[in-house]
Length: 375
Image 1 (cartoon, rainbow, N blue to C red):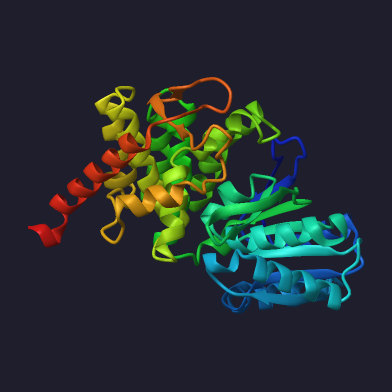
Image 2: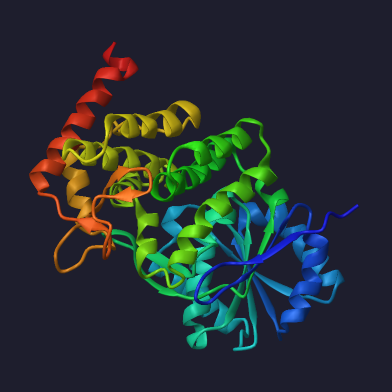
């Protein structure tokens, strides 16, 4: 018997209906018909088309939803102007109009590229998120921010464009490799650090992870983000705290060139942010230790400074962070669970580059001391 899906709206200035459950594909055509459209376009990768898209298209067509399939590649390098322009031109060539509906089947990369194309085409057409990863189900779709990367960094070019519907079928995420699922859990652990009073919320998330309870895990991860968004439905104020660890993490991910998933880079970035705050005398050693324990020991995400990276290269890449202002590069630093060193404004503080560099060098030295090759 089909379980009734859980329905809610994202708590943003432009909210999106979210339908969450497992095995929901049979209900999707009726939802799309309610939206109304002249044509549908399914944007996905070849791998995901073979895995889920082919059967989805057949099911849609049985219910009079004809979807033209447009394939993009896999991987972070697809979040580029080149791919965005090609997709946009293909949509025009295939006959997309202002009444068309774009369906994005995939993770954060496909969602961002399709969301950008939808936001730009004819100054904005509607799109539907069909997330297939834990990260997309619980983090990237819970935002109206769409972006592509530039030559010098991640998410440098973007806009705000809300999905008309988020269709969260957990069944699609079950085929995701465990390493990639783990990457998606990192953002939920981060949400606990930045908004809760202690580690209990993280322990609940990790319990669901340990028991491979994917529906419960997804619900807990979503719920960890909602209070932050409710406090700043525009995503332009206090919700910047969601970027904790990302100044380091985005630069690490960009330099990794595909060696790390987003959440893995953010896990390392969170630990580096914790190290910097501790070095400045703000973050207690116990909370810094929780970073390594919850992310590394309990979840199994990477937390050590990458052995292929030099501190100077990382600091240079961080200068292109998308949160940088005329005051220069700022850092989101905690002094405890749910407490930022700067609780006002954009929550960021300035730190001298030499102090940051010394923190990175110490992290690199510890990583080398504890690596198997050094024993």
